[in-house]
Length: 118
Length: 107
Image (cartoon, rainbow over all chains, first blue to last red; front, side):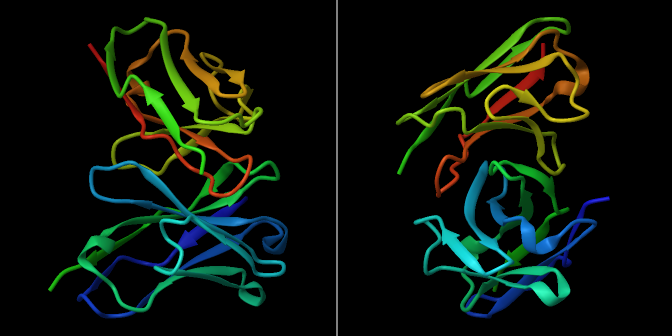
């Protein structure tokens, strides 16, 4: 069974760093792209970027380029999304998703809620 | 970058009604278009990919059509469990932008 399990909710202060994770199982982790999607409170889905764990090829949305870093450790089948300096506007639910061979997101993680507040 | 729009932004229909949601890309994307359903407080779910291919396990009352710039998602007979927000997404090339969503509820 394909599963993506994300790390738990986080509460951080502005300026702090954060790395959240997404662990894949039940399939060949290195053979599928993993994407990250932001959903701010009460708002729609925003595509942040993708990574191919097989070779760490990464693509970012222009809106998120330079704001976050996407990485992966294929030895433990885990993808990451990290911030070096959080802002209150980073408060959102973050989802990881597996991209099927065409590019649509066929499996999703349960989401990680990130709250940034002083 | 290619922009995605959806119409309407929300709709209210009766159980059993036929519901149609439109998604438009600012440039042609062939059939690289997916539709997702997100129920309140839940994780998004893939309904349709390649514009018209139903994802395994999705009820047959959902269908998709279109190619190029104009796409539609149709629910042939709206059910109470279809109350959700529906998003289109293009994936011909990065960024794989989502549309703004269409909220569907029961009249």
